[in-house]
Length: 126
Image (cartoon, rainbow, N blue to C red; front, side, top):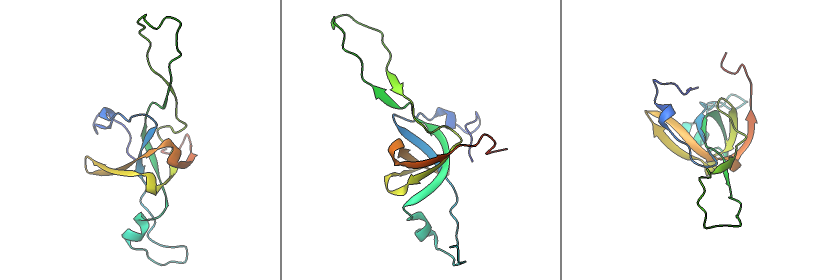
């Protein structure tokens, strides 16, 4: 799992909206019966899993209309946070994933709605 550190430049990435940056797990190259699967079959599976590296701020909440719309306000945008957190293992739908390569590493960006399940363990990397 790639963690966000000062040395790997991942801290410079900003994930927008309800999207999640995931580092895919290396798929198993065998079936349960022991048959080897070619990489093209493994990548075409409908459901994939990986580690959540970064998450976006969430869903923007619309501003409440005021009685005096001509007044300027310095109100910041508020967000409804996502369920996914950095370090979670995510099971997601591959068809909604966008593959990106950043610093020679393969990642996928998926919307929160494409994540089917999260596994959160405190000692996942210990």
